[in-house]
Length: 454
Image (cartoon, rainbow, N blue to C red; front, side, top):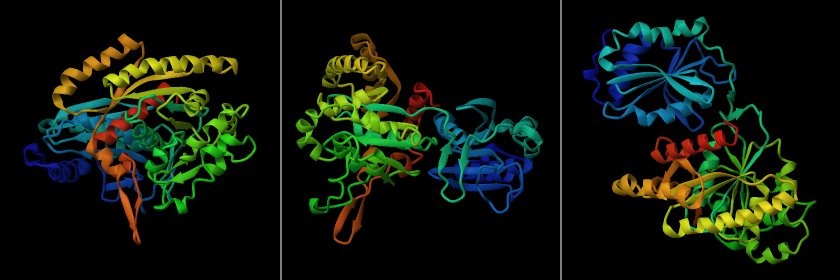
């Protein structure tokens, strides 16, 4: 059957006329070797084609995953969809990915934790280039031994959770700025979800007495303080006792993302007990010791800190290996960077006394940034350039913009009887194809690369 790209007027027609009616048959895939609209955890694939016949359709560690095919609207620029394809291929350990909008067709290959472009042609040249396409992703080509890498990710039939083989020691990352309202909690919870979806085991620790992260991960399931089930088992108890309240007992499963993450909740009682805790010998080191006991259970620990220079911020930074400094890049947030640097200087003096290396700053993360076109085009570049010049701090590559979807996913709720209970979701679960979700996927990739876990 011939293919005419002019007949593809929308995404549905790209799927049916290019992929289903033309490409899959030409590449040798029969009806029982490809699947449409495949769900793997939070990932939704347009098409997944197998080199070998798979009946019934089961995903496990030995599945012959081969080609992901993604169809887009003819008016959409394929460049904006490359990060998501990268996420699909690297998360599922699929070696090849095809991306097309009918007017253009690209084939990418997974290379370790990244992808590279192997082939590209216009829609009108697909027929003349079909032999080249076949040599890369035809069913027979793949069966002849193209798929040589062993799976780095196991996809279990029962829960579809992604678990990467552990090759590195646990990394502890604090997210800190002494100015509030810069997107710190939003960053922590959605970064945690994005890292978890890359197969890493994640623990989040909420150091803020406002317990925003505890709320944001859906652990506050009561509408009245009388039913508070967190007050007797939270971070405060972890820090008060060397022997009691280990991380493994206090951490709670949070279903705000899939796969789940573990969270050590914060509580308002942290505020009233700070002075007492400050008088305890060794209070700054208790968390370091307790995390040592769970170092084989987690790959990444993310710590949400209070926007202050208090004891809890101090303990968080003493405990961490790395630091991300979120900032909305507004004047007071930028001025606060001087305070942050001075605070870190004192932290590093203490770290030296306990023979810990200096805190490694991953960079200033631009957060809650306006999407106004003129601001993004003219003002944002100047503000980003000012950070290294004025404060001698590196700026992270990823930018997290202030988008409506981020607010909506955090405000989701459930009605149980007469009560409305908070039921937030990560942006990657609430709207996985959104630009906001892509931004956090890019942030997770950048962070994991910088800490050596990519």
